[in-house]
Image 1 (tube, rainbow over the protein chains, first blue to last red):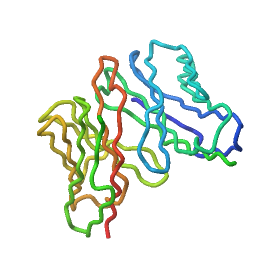
Image 2 (cartoon, one colour):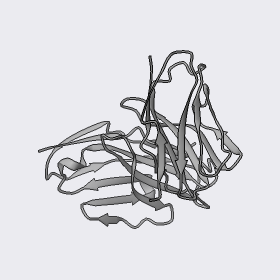
Image 3 (cartoon, rainbow over the protein chains, first blue to last red):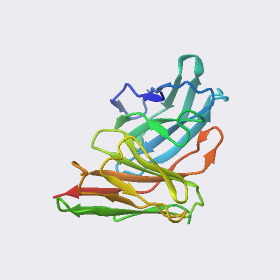
Image 4 (tube, chains in turn purple, red):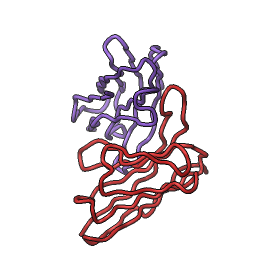
Length: 116
Length: 115
């Protein structure tokens, strides 16, 4: 069964600190996608990144970076030099190609608070 | 502009009434989804549809119904059978890839309150 675990329910940091949000997934498929979404206080989910199971390259986009490790089934998200505007709920999601095709499973989310 | 619209943004309903939430997309996506989010919790899938005139139950379909008569539209009806309907409802759409469901794009959500 597909499952996504975000063990950190809430994280609080001070502006300019680095912060890593953890995501661990379970799947029996060899082909799948992983995603990160951001949900600001307005409520709408904003897409951040997609990674397919065959691409383990880490990715950096400005202050954001993602570390995908199939060996540990993890897809962690790091924000460097955090800012108050980064305060939001962040969701990790998994989409399988076969077993549960057509569905995505979301983690319970990590609430990040960045204090000035 | 391409995107997903949901209406209304806030909805109040009396107990025992059915209510329909609208979701429209102009992204030409084949797949559409409805999620429910309760305070402090993640997203739970209610229904999804990969093609017109076809849809599947998600993890919490009881008390809800949907239709997919047009590619652009996927309305959700919250029936009186849903015991605890007060929640935030999110609609999403995506293309379909061989590797799994592609990136989902979300609407702004509808906050339903039962009085």
